[in-house]
Amino acid sequence: MGGGKLNTLMHLALVVILIASLFGGFLQVSSSPLEHVTVYVNNNISPGTDMWVHCHSDDRDLGVQKVAFEQNFSWDFWLWIHMERSKRYWCHVWWLDSKGKFIDGTFDMYKGSRDIEGCGKQCSRFARLEGIYIVEGGKLEFAYPWNQK
Ligand SMILES: *[C@@H]1O[C@H](CO)[C@@H](O)[C@H](O)[C@H]1NC(C)=O
Image (cartoon, rainbow, N blue to C red):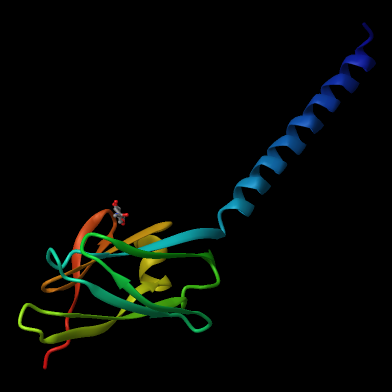
């Protein structure tokens, strides 16, 4: 085999490796800026207690949803993580306590600035007797109390 032919083969191999690595890098970069996010709002208040949830974003109204004990209301959306840090879903949540008293509050259930890093693709929220808990960085944290009246 002549030296010239070997050189050409090696060049070819280099070019193939270069293209493959560029393409691989491109795929990696292009798959990360868009995230598919699901938010779960769980009724963890008390057995037999229903709750109602009405969530909005700037451009969506998710309607009034009735959620039984230990059930979730969930929704999903695509998010450009570098451009939508201001993305927000807020929910009005209400229920009746054992004396029939109306308890409610309006809370940021999804907030890009907090949740792009805080919960990523799956964002779990729990309504309990004291208020709303959120899972951030894998830990359950108390986030918001109910309205005080
Ligand atoms: C509700 O969502 C949580 C995740 O946020 C999940 O662990 C749980 O199994 C779900 N419950 C129901 C009844 O779907």
